[in-house]
Length: 288
Ligand SMILES: [Zn+2]
Image (cartoon, rainbow, N blue to C red):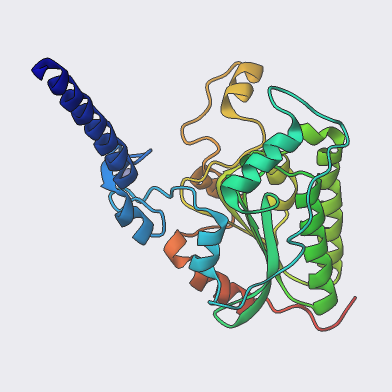
C-alpha cells in the first residue's frame, strides 16, 4: 500500500504549494505603472503609493480619512441612506443584489462617506467617494448625501472638500442617477452664492457624470499625480473623432497644462495643502 500513501503526500504537497502561492499574492503586489513587484506592507505604509515610481494606487475611503482627517474628529452624516430600486433593474444580476454585494465588500451603505471633520484644526464638510462600491457611481443616495452635506455647509458656514473617485452615473438607476448631476450642481451654486469655498480633489479615476458635475465645479480643483480625469473614455473619443489622441491625454498633468486643474498634489502632501487652503479661504462672513 505504499503507493497510496505516496499519493496522499503528493496531494498534501500540492495543496501546500497552492496555499503558499495564495499567501505570496497576499504579501506581494505588482505596480501598475513600473511593473515592480513590491511588498504589500511597504505600499500600505507609503499611503498606497509605489515607492519606486510614485504611482498612486487607489485608496479605500476609510484609509483616505486616516491620511487626511485629524484623528477622532469625523462625525458622519446620513450613514443609513440606502438605494431603492425604482426601475427594478436587472442585468446579469438584480440591482439590489449588486448593492448588497458592495455593502458587504466595503462595509458602507453606498458609494460616498459624508461628514463634518477637522483637517489640522480647520473645520470642513467632507465627502469621500468609495470607488470599491459599484465604481463610486453617482446614484441617488450619493447625490442626496452630497447635497445634504453642501446644505449643512451653508447652514454652518463651513468650507466643503470632496474627494472624487468615480466611473460616473449609476446606470441601474437610469435618469434618477443623471438627475444627481443637476441636483449637486444646483446645491454647489447656492454654496457659491453664500460665499463658502469648495475644494474638489480628483483621484484616479474621476470620469463621467462626477467629473461633469461635482468634480470640475471646485473653486479650487486639485488632482493626484497621473490620475485619469475625463468624461468619456479615450477609446470612445478616439473612435468618434477618428484621430490619434495626444500623449498623456486625460491624465492630471495634461489637464493642469490645459487649465482644467489648478494643482497636482502628492498624497503625502494633501493634508497639509488642504489645511493651508482652508485657512486662507475662510467662508465670507457677509452673506450676499
Ligand atoms: Zn511603481
